[in-house]
Image 1 (spheres, helix red, strand yellow):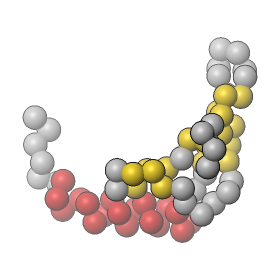
Image 2 (cartoon, one colour):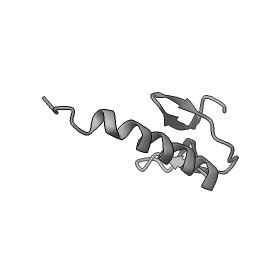
Image 3 (tube, one colour):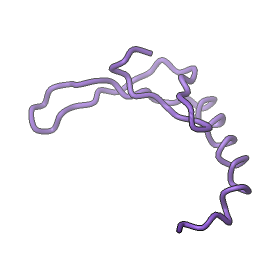
Length: 65
């Protein structure tokens, strides 16, 4: 992914995923397209959801303080 693509994160690290689909990121003040947002496909979503589900037991009882 190029530096102007906003990607995904999983397990605290960048995750490129397998989808090549993106959507434009637009500056609302100027209408200028400033980058691209990586869009996930079903496999990417499953990877991220599975990682979140695996992390949940360790985090569920963590105090917000």
